[in-house]
Length: 98
Image 1 (cartoon, rainbow, N blue to C red):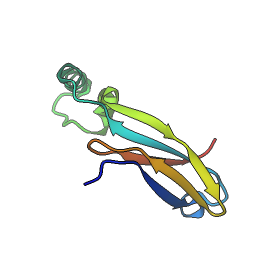
Image 2 (image 1 turned 120 degrees about the horizontal axis):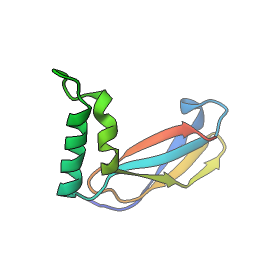
Image 3 (image 1 turned 90 degrees about the horizontal axis):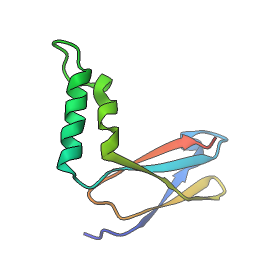
Image 4 (image 1 turned 60 degrees about the horizontal axis):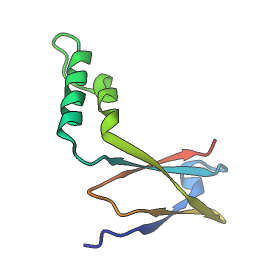
């Protein structure tokens, strides 16, 4: 399996008709046991009594991910973005350009 950059074309109108797109790659940082333990401790401290971990505690884990703005190029109704090699995964966040 190739761990190399790939290009992706997005049809602008499928996301935000008439607006330019901004694309960000959200990927995990390299594993750091201390950072993970700190995030878990922070999440537990945010819980209410008898509450399960959920969206209300998600902000505790923000330090474990990295956001990278990706360069885009437009060609008619399409936007092309180059996604760098991922280890092990990432999520593309597509928003209207501000």
